Image 1 (cartoon, rainbow, N blue to C red):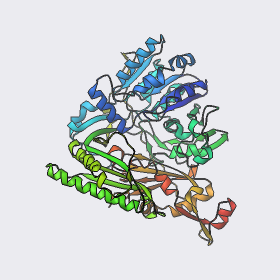
Image 2 (cartoon, rainbow, N blue to C red; image 1 turned 90 degrees about the horizontal axis):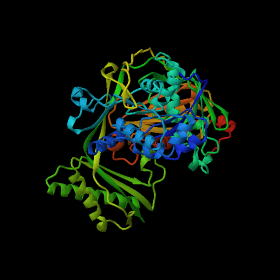
Image 3 (tube, rainbow, N blue to C red; image 1 turned 45 degrees about the vertical axis):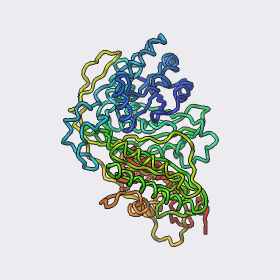
Image 4 (cartoon, one colour; image 1 turned 135 degrees about the vertical axis):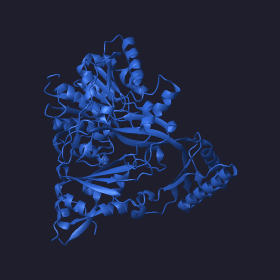
Length: 606
């Protein structure tokens, strides 16, 4: 425990490949206690696993060592900033060893700790009887598995800090754990401080995607377009009671507002009343956001309802190969020409596969971009003299995918007129990486912590304290006595953001004013949203869409099941993560009272 009245944590990385300027920008603010880095996604783990298989010294985020740390270590040491990162991937020891060498070469004295125990790849045979927690599928063939990792929590990170670590490197942990670990250490939070743990987890959730909390992917991007390229990375200042503010370094671009923070809170949370993390079951439904000043937002109201009894474990596994390419078709009838080209390529590919004695294509995808193909039945404009056509396939073997790539190029000279493409290297077959998720009891995991290469005393198993969840609050009904209405785009009434979890998509919609919420909810029913995304949803689902209400922020969160064509690299779609789904829904028109539109000075189109 540090005994500080508050701590300041900078979010320096939102994914593997984030900008290297985040670390020096945050350090330049001169008043941080911690910097946290999130590098890992399911696909990232499979990539790192392949790298480790080829070279035992790889399998981690190398740019954390060489781009984020190496140029900035002297300032990190001088300012006494602690660094917490899940950069270890599938090889956290190798990451730590590489970083320790850089530290030694610079003549610095910084202690590096490693959290171990998440990697379960050598236990694949033990899980043969498990079924996938969402789809019910059987466990994949062990020989196809690239990685198996448990999502660890924050208490091991806090224990490493308690032992004197300056830098803590983990393998797979939940994204928010690096932030929560700092809070547990600084404020001596206990395992049953559930409300505080929920607040710290929410702070981590806001920080974990970097500039998505400070203007990136923001609905009102035009309002900050001149400064968005220099957006500041987010900073959370937390108090011992869990309350916190969100800001960014002074002089940087972007924006910190109730809108930007609210959108990020809603991002990829599923059921906001039961957001499951290893250390706490979070309830964000009553969270409140306050604009305290320019680029300063206060956050309070997260609640914790016990802790789960198990860890989520995800395996990534190879299920064939895939490839695709985007072509441009120009001129009269461009969409029809693009569709004809696609059909010709697929037909030729199937013929050549049969001739080669190979099985047919497992899946094909053609998306004509430029005719609102993503809008399904909500399409409004479909005449275009130029379109992009994205073609993609899956096959059991790289040879089969290679035949598709060859025939696609070979048909270019027999295509309808107006075909063009950007010159460059040809696409190559790449593995289809699928995700298998399951739960295992916490006592089946042995977590270890090493500090400067020395094993610390055994880290005890986490104990579950499950509590009953409160009943959800009903969405307020609109005034049914009103008879005069106007239709306005949802975007004038709400902010929106969407993202993925496996083959599920989340769409968060937050009303710009409390008066709008009931009218938004009256239009965006479960049935209406399911119909709107019917062209993406897997057919014959009993419950394709769920809707959740967050009264604290006047928000709705929609969870769409089996809607991404497999999600990630298992999907052939142009938007395999549902990142644009909120933008699709924000164009929907909402009926609101005319008087309400006039009161809020909304443009009315008769």
